[in-house]
Amino acid sequence: MTALLNAMDLNGWASMPGFVDAAASRCLRQECVDACEQGEFKPAGVGQGINLRVREDIRSDQMMWLQPGDTSVEQGIYLAKLELLRLALNERFFLGLFEFEGHFAIYPEGAFYKAHLDRHAGTSDRIVTTILYLNPDWQPGDGGELKLWTTAGDKAGDFVLIEPRMDTLVCFLAGEFWHEVLPAKKTRMSITGWFRQR
Ligand code: OGA
Ligand code: MN
Image (cartoon, rainbow, N blue to C red):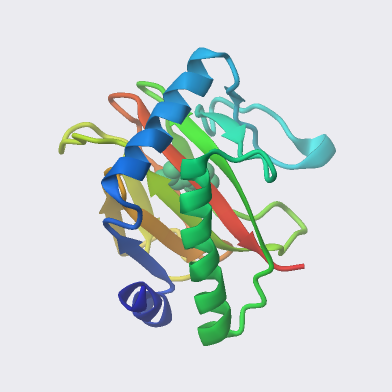
């Protein structure tokens, strides 16, 4: 956790392999697979409220929100880790993060999410993005990398490509770092979420 906080301090983003243990992340992946087979995912949208639209030219993933109060044991394990992270971020950076919202995401083969910031027009409640990847055996060439531009506020210049490997947590300042998901060449799963301010 200290390494992650130091990276957030230095760069505003961080990537940490092994954030949850292998058994828990395998179960989370299985939950994701099962829920998808039961038809519980829906096409992800762009925008919020009455402006929410499915725009497959911008993003083509499918999603299912986590339901607070109806979480599996493994979701509970992950959410407990995130709670420790939330408290640590508040203690170190005085961010006043008060809650987490998150969803499972599936990118079928060919799916992508064009460059964006994680903030809806006219809002500022999403402060820190967290993404846990759930893809065992991810290989170079499988696509689906997270492309994250490393200068706050800039959608140009230096970037990193992060492979969506099992157990890896990525976090960054939601309203400052432009990012995109490159087309996945095989099904790509994750839990994406945000720490929010009031
Ligand atoms: C998002 C997003 C990135 C990823 O859902 O807003 O940018 O790597 N996801 O899944
Ligand atoms: Mn995003």
